[in-house]
Length: 187
Image (cartoon, rainbow, N blue to C red; front, side):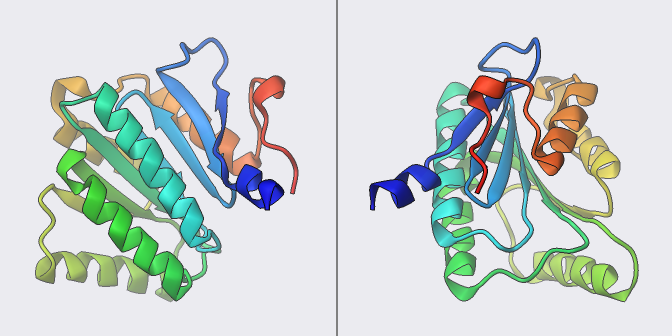
């Protein structure tokens, strides 16, 4: 049981040359979470457990205490993502409900081309018509357009080092870390 609990605990790896509180990558087992000041980026392949979403919520709430003016969030859904299981969907909804008062904006970045990606983008955009979030939301097709949308909604408090944010996303995708002592253990 201790091994399972240990596997669920976020492991944090800090980007090269970055202060510990400004940029880090956490892996909540199957859910990479990149934290850059008051911006949280989640790469969701749809294979994370409900416990991973609970852990990501804890990260967001911790950042909200550090940044009371609010958080921005980008959820990246890669082209090879699968729909999450029912318990994970419930955990996603619960996490968004609990974190919503701290969010200034949320960008869903649905990567890929073709019918599947277009359908998912349309479904998320359509959902926004029926379910009003207390913060602005957007659906974008790639990380660059998502970051530009976030900049417009963040104002002066946006983490301005886009190169570092983009690099952190790349590192998380490749399973890399710039600090081997804090690297996630292989599974």
